[in-house]
Length: 117
Image 1 (cartoon, rainbow, N blue to C red):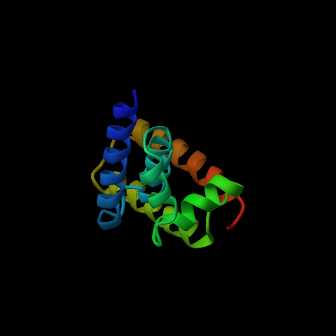
Image 2 (image 1 turned 90 degrees about the vertical axis):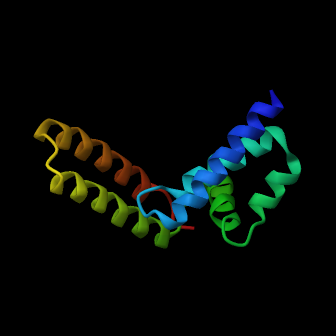
């Protein structure tokens, strides 16, 4: 089972790194997922990730206080707005837009109701 956790951690980490360059792919949630998987499979990789200078602070904020930095909240909100704008521009059906809007509003509420780090 540890090998499965390790593979899932590596995949989550890799997709998270890609998310640094693709604005609609969420990096921090994928790094949180990678930290979870590494915690189940490799203490060394888990420690490396949570002490990483770029990813570590966000992971530690979430693990210790369930907090999200204001900067991350703003970036997430911009990404959410961009994703919805793209959906409107490409002409998704109104029913799909309504479902997407409801989902994105729920995600936004979740993000903005978390404490600031």
